[in-house]
Length: 524
Image (cartoon, rainbow, N blue to C red; front, side, top):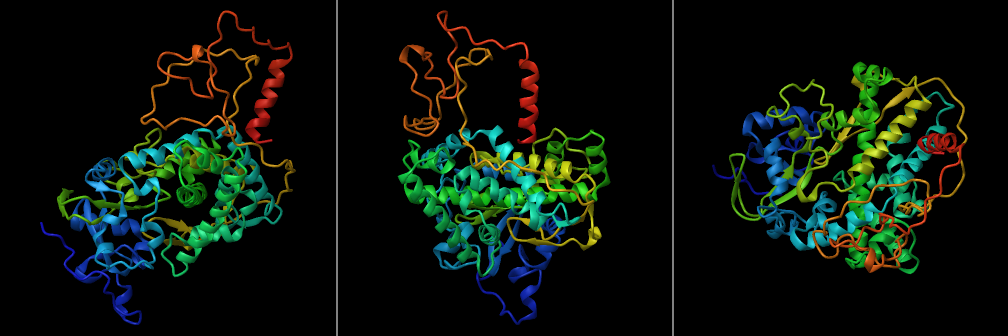
């Protein structure tokens, strides 16, 4: 089969032309933007699947050609075979021949940056290692407490009114509040940052300016952390042994911030919509037959926060899904269509409980490293909201809900609800606590089993921490290290015969323990 991209890319009808908004463009190819793609993406995927199979030719903004991968197995091959499909956007033939200009609306997404998402091989391992190592240092329990506190703070803003829009007043703000705290820049959280993060992935005329605002905010943060490190994610990236430059750190923070924000804001809104509109969801949650994390996982199948990821670029001529892919062709990981592939999901109404084979977080070497934090924000945020306002009801007809979409995502514009008015909840005013994992004191009452030996990292720099890094444990003595290598900084060596006996619990400890657990779970 010959490539269907026989038209001249970048040539589009003038804005006044009626053909400008048609669902198909030059060569009869379907557009992955415009009214049909935004309003009914599932219908568009069905048409593409019927016409082309598991890999379909489509048009991006400006009628630039690309391939949308629809099949589940084809997407797995795409993401797991970097030798055939690279993440380096400089391979894109449309960039090389000038078909795509630097000011293209999707430029913030595809323009090459010195970050792991655009790298393969050893460079990807070095940069990705810095990201994953830094994420492993985050105190997930502490983050959940902050999520709960931030959620209740947002609910306090509208709980006395009896009505709210859960998109603009909750879902769009909670992820940004949490990520700013994790990064170490809570003072930068404001409405402008929220809107800039939302805008820069939409392919709008202001996307480039929104991107510039976020880069400026993160540049200031990195400059501060070079001079004054703190126990936060930005400092850990700055001081990681991978020795990333300031530009690399800024671009990785930008990548993580936008990916985490966009995906989690959409996920929260989608979970809440399903709870409010699907009687099975609400009944199962209320009856204890479904937990909020299970509802989140079902939503990741049915309404993933990212519908597609752009992109991959063919290293050479190859074949995928029966289509002849040419060197330099652009491909999109079709997350939403892969999740509804009839091969893996013949019955879309079936309960997917316990099945995490969805591609909501992509796959392969570039699978989202922060997915557990995203799940935590959605789990705790939705649970806190439903605990505070258990009688939430949609205040409009479901048919009146509207979405705005782009090639990467489809998010709810508004989710208006009504509920019984309730008083504000008193929240502690303590400043943000340290987000780093804390090592347990050696005289704590818990007695743990010896840790299993940890295999060597995939590369020499992964898992290492400089001795001066915030939250880093003192270096272990050589005699205490097992033959396989040093224990991680967060794991206590097994006590030897001469070790001090741990302090024992006093008689009243169990009651105090459960009180502490209760306070921790509630986020106080």
